[in-house]
Image: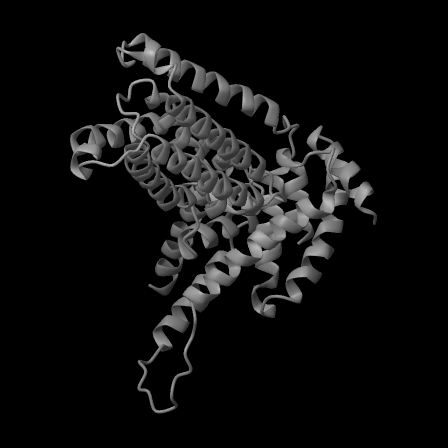
Length: 211
Length: 177
C-alpha cells in the first residue's frame, strides 16, 4: 500500500479548482446565445408585441424562467460531492404546483371552455415537443460536461435537476415563438415536452457521468 | 488529525505539494480503512480503499477550501461504498451443493503455477502490468492509475515483459529438448 500511496503522491500536479462562478457564467452565456440565435432566426411569433400585453404570456415566461433558474442552480450546486439536490428538487416541485395553480386561475378567468380537441391543437403540440427537446440539448450537453468534470455523488438527482432546468429553459425560449396562449394548451403540451426531456436526461445522464 | 489540518494538506496538494499530499494520503488511508471495514466484507476492503483514494486523487480539484473537508471526504467515500454494494449485488453468490459434479481443474492449476513462475522472472513493474492488463482485464488507463506508472510506461512494460516471457518459454523448450 505504501508503494501505491507513493505513486499517487508522485503523480501529483497542481490543479485548477472547480469554479462554480465560471460554470454559471458559461451557462448564462450559452443560454443568452441560444435565445439570441432563436430570435435572430426570425422564429418569434408575428404578434409578439401584442402578446407582451397578455398576462398569460408573462405567466408562461415567469413560471418557466423561475423553473429554469431553480433547475440550473440545483444542478450546479449538486456537482459538489457533499451537496444533495434533494432540497432544490423539492423547491422545483413546489414551483411547478404553483405555476399550474396560477395557470388554472387564468383559465378560469378566461372562461376557457370549448372544444377540447381544438384547444389542444395536436399539430402545434408536436411542433412544441420537437422545439423543446431540441432547444434543451445545448444546456444539457454543457451541464453534462460540467457534471463529468466535477464529482456529483447524487447522479440521479443531479440528472433530474439538469433535465428539468434545461427543459424549462427550452420552453422559456419557445414561448417567444408559440402562438398559443391557452393555459390548458400550455399545461398539456409544455408539460409533456418538459416531461419527455426530463425522462431522456434522467435515463442517459447517470450512465455518462459515472466516475 | 483535525478536519482543518486535512483541509490545509489538501489545499497544499491542490497547489502541487507532493510531500504534504503523501502525508494526507497516509491519514486518509487509515480513515478509509476504518470506514470500509465497518461496511464491507473484509476481502474487498483494501480494493475499496484504493478505489476511493484514486477518486480523491482524480477529483481533488473539487475540494473547496471554503468548506469543511470532512463532509467532502465522507461524500466521496459513501459514493464509492454504494458502488461497491452495487457490484456485490451483481456478483451475488449462491451456495453450491456438495453433490455437484465439477470438471478436473488440474490443468488450470498447473498453468497458473507455471505462469506465476514465469512472471516471477520479470521485473516487478513488468509483472504487475501484465497481471493487471492481460490476466485481470484492466485497461491500460486503469492500470496506469493503479500502479502509478504513466500510460506509455505501462505499454512499454507489457511489451518488454511479454518479450522476456516469450524468450523464457523458448529457452525452456530448448532445455526440455
